[in-house]
Amino acid sequence: MSKRVVLIGHPVAHSLSAAMQQAAFDKAGIDARYELWDRAPIALADAIAEVKGDDFLGANVTIPHKERVVPLIDKLTEEAQATGAVNTLTREGRRLVGHNTDVPGFDVALDKLVGRQKMPRQAVLLGAGGGARAVVYGLIRAGFQRIVIFNRHLHRAEGLVKFFGRSAAHMDLKAMPWHDSIIESELARTKVLINATSIGLADDISPIPGEVLTGDLLVLDLIYKRTRLLRDAEAVGAAANDGETMLLHQGAAAYTLWTGQAAPLDVMGQALADARAGGVRSAEGEPVGDADAAVPEAASPAG
Ligand code: NDP
Image (cartoon, rainbow, N blue to C red; front, side):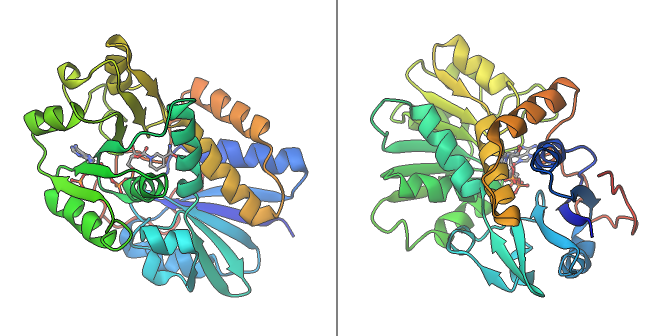
């Protein structure tokens, strides 16, 4: 029987993950199909129940469901529990296990960003959603001593700080109101800047003015493209990486969880590059639209 893996999100009209995972299954000769399920929040519980079927290897979960899926899962791994976010599901019989492979994906991306330098200790993080949770967890584990989170809705950043309260007890983790002047003064004492908002994904805009960037910054944008923020960073001589490494490595970790096999990174990386060249955008952060709108039952199983 052909196996199935689904990406559950809203929207998921196009997906780089589909291209990457299908290429890996095909290369390994695994008879599995990666499908896209566009499910609004109201339809999430039914989708999760369906994934318990024998024909499923598992699933990916993306925007806007990574946090709200948590209570629907039978068992969480340490990383899913520690971040309060799930992006990958595996099955143990009829029980679903929730993983967070954004965590290992971010670890690889951070290592690549820092390169041979000593691991910095201060970071500014823009955004407080599901992706930001993996970032905060990774930065704390990497030994950062000060992380300042800015988010459009301050209360969400404050919630994140509260969530990580215990694991961040030894360091300075704080939420601050989003004002360019405050961001600028924080950046002056910071080495690492990470964008985990979706600003710049759909439109060519940056979350912050280019003037607040300095040449000694290491800038990572989780968005998988050369965003305005990254171009502004390069223009002042800062190091600037996009979300490709994180996307590839979170996908590779998920593939290994589903198949028990090492992921063919070169094949997956090539499939990502081809899909991007063909104009496919990442479902990891498509604009969410009206997240509470109902979606017709059979919407976009685009495979
Ligand atoms: P969420 O929906 O959970 O969070 C979205 C974040 O973006 C929130 O902080 C939200 O702020 C902010 N935001 C969205 N629109 C605006 C706006 N117009 N103005 C200001 N802030 C805005 O999404 P995720 O955390 O899952 O993803 C966020 C980004 O990270 C996406 O662009 C995605 O592509 C990227 N990502 C990439 C990954 C990779 O592997 N490369 C993995 C995970 C994420 P608020 O809370 O105020 O609404």
